[in-house]
Image 1 (tube, rainbow, N blue to C red):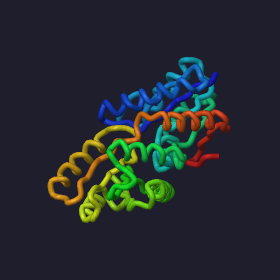
Image 2: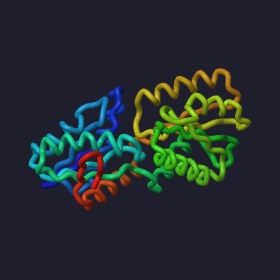
Image 3: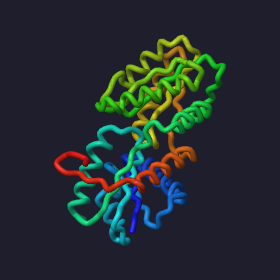
Length: 256
């Protein structure tokens, strides 16, 4: 019997965890599996071990693990596999399948455009864009993020699209804001490449509010990616893809 285990990042802000669970609940309706559970890598409950345990308690002998994360950085390559190894040790006869994050799916750009338009962006507006990622030390993840920024530049008709990061990469968010404060554009749209609300969104809004007290161009913070039908379709696709994969095995720090 198969179960699907969705893994979110987790947050100290309860609303962010609630949003993640609600997002998955809607996606579950289009996934052909009777047992589907949600868990978190950190900061929220249940964790991966508890989530896997709930699947096993309901009779699962195969668990399809689907990360509800944006890019393939350290959490995907190291942290979640480390937790899955613990699951495998507890349940040695359990078959685990491990999927991919949202990655460079074409629908991601569509959602970013909707977020921009929701804040008032138009094609003829004199405006720059600051795309803000969580950040990572993983070079491949950073390359993917810059590809997304390049795609957004193309989607917006060649507008000035700069990037910044909230941690682990440069330029930092503070540096990005400072650079955008020198923009000659009438307005700057700050677009967070984050799944759900949390402390990072709160901190970004506070800094933008302070910047707007002195900066020449008005800065507007767009919404996070969040609860979106297009993203639900991406998650559904990733789930079905993972169901068709061979079993995941991790030994001595290597995937084989």
